[in-house]
Amino acid sequence: MDKEKVQDVLDQIRPGLQADGGDVELVAVEDDGTVKVRLTGACAGCPMSTMTLKNGIERALKDHIPEVKEVVQA
Image (cartoon, rainbow, N blue to C red; front, top):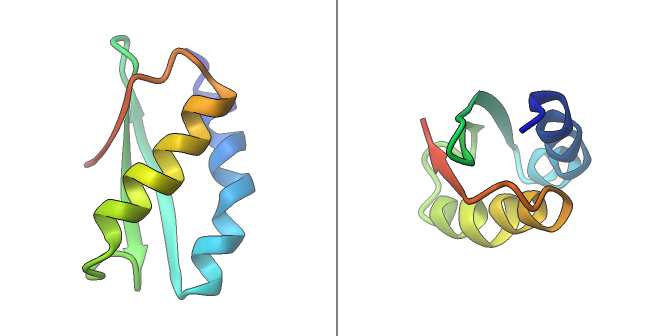
């Protein structure tokens, strides 16, 4: 899986996170299709961060890159 493609998708959704005072940082792309990210800013301590991770970030990545199996926090 191409790390650059993953970063491109994250760059597309980043403005939505930044609008709420948060951000996302790509940590790793594993061979098994797992993408590791770090939520920062307001997202780091937000009780909705799991929903943001699964329903926002993971869904967007899977829609654009079928090889993505799961997105987890690093």
